[in-house]
Length: 88
Image 1 (cartoon, rainbow, N blue to C red):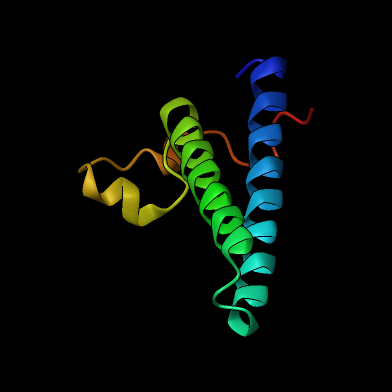
Image 2: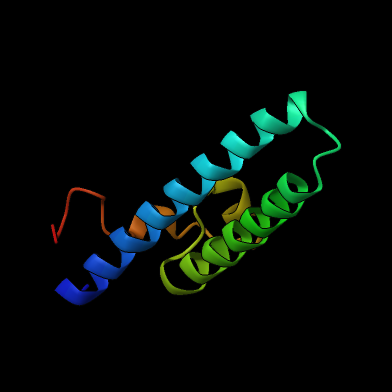
């Protein structure tokens, strides 16, 4: 995997982490303010963005979760580069 691909992969994972955190934060707010429409819209936007990031990552680098990979009857995770290989 090229250095550029490794950097892009790390950027996608970092963005996924940030969006997931924001989504959880909004969900906590919604626990106490379930009728807050702006928060509900924000949560939905983060949810859609997270889904898009996961799809982009999976299309380029393979699935993030073993369960996703097992559904396709492939076992590619073991043949892909390990996370500590090819630092950015």
